[in-house]
Length: 148
Image 1 (tube, helix red, strand yellow):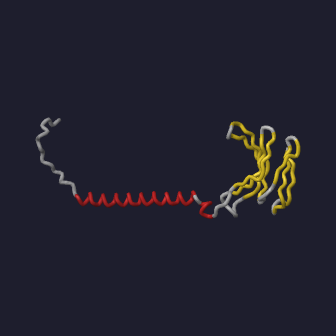
Image 2 (tube, rainbow, N blue to C red):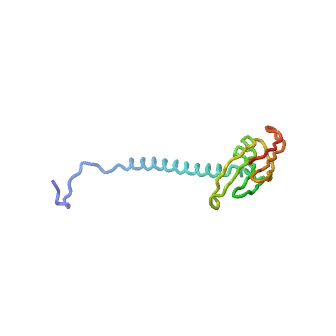
């Protein structure tokens, strides 16, 4: 039943809380929090270091525009690209066509890729025709092509 006399104190068989258990729990939780803080610090340092790898290794350009030709409602771009792998990763010359959908938004069509090449040029060869020249490369030799 309900005890309506709240002022009445009953004898309790439960002993007072043991302070040694509280001290042990406190020490354990401090260890947990210290490891958590150390883990957060370590992940922050790793995030900072890995986000700045190209600058830490060498200030290299990962992409370079070699030439652009405008024709009608589209443009053709010749660009040198390198992946984050640096000297070991793939790099080469990329030829792509871009059509503006909205300002700043393009539909891109990849036309060709020449692995190992580092330079080249494009020019207009007639109506809706682009001439591409890639100098002598190890994997492709000299390339002269016309795209329409």
